[in-house]
Length: 358
Image (cartoon, rainbow, N blue to C red):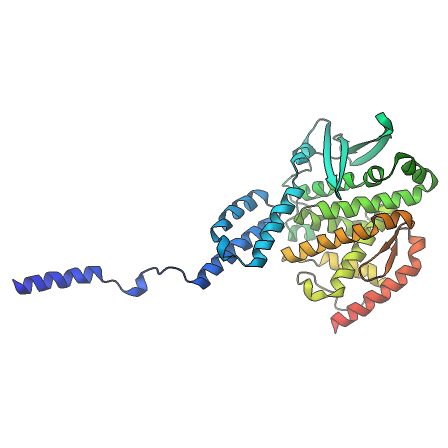
């Protein structure tokens, strides 16, 4: 009987005892931190890809790891929440309307009221309305807005761009065309247009394109780079459009070449171009922004655009299209006025690019 009891007890202990290697131990601090980092990475990836439904789900999931996020990651989440609301404001759904609507938008801290008129081709026009105020009408193709149809082209495919990204770029650009009319008194606007239409069109195009690239969401911002590169090659662009795109590309080259280590997703040329140094370098940089584009890079570009606009918004008006780049070189929107500045920018790009290549 005693032996029976001993055998029974031994068998019971065998059932209760399990090898420690088979029991899932609570995750340690390192594993928890890794899980938090992975969850944050999904938020950043959805944001940079402008996948708003996935972003909402990822933000919900990352809350479980809130206490294990780093200060930098928490700051990143805060930035993502704030800017997502700016990219998709309450009036955004109106952009897809197939009937005329009124849009109350906000660009560069200014309220813009525009009459939206759906059309096959983008357009912006203004007229004097009641109370001697300028009435703005903007148009674009509503079928482009939020479209998931893949955009054609090798570069577009690498970044997963869609025609919806092009539509977003167009919406903000058309609203940006109104910046002069909402910033200046009506008489001043008409005087500028009548006395120097050439300058007026260059300024208007500059405001439109820098507004679009700043206010676009991350993936559409890369679509804007593609559109600007096409304009710089002379594809479907007029001089004012080309020059405004060149100005923004010069800004991009200036901030990247100042410290290439801060731009890990941007590849540099292997050699300095023999001629047209800045222009060719700008096109190369745009074409070689990698899909690994990071939140830090996107944020840095957007902040550079904001600072560029704040420094040059009034300067461009008062100085006949003169702009100041972060590297302290100048840029004139109208090409004949820019030739002496171009030489200095070419020299600066050559110097920085040579240093980076070495």
